[in-house]
Length: 89
Figure (cartoon, rainbow, N blue to C red):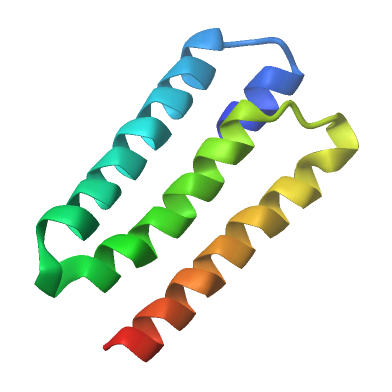
């Protein structure tokens, strides 16, 4: 969320790049866990959902009024991850 605000206010471009890079790395790690470890497959899938949502939020330029939409995307992704974990384990 801080990276979204920094992008809107045209300040601290390093934070925006760091948030984008971190979301990509975390999504790749979650996908790697899901592929490499069959016993942790659902954990990797559950982790991949919020990571992918964070990546999408970081790549999308939200207008000032759209910050609430970004928050809803992140909350919805976390709820999906919770449902996956609930039914998988």
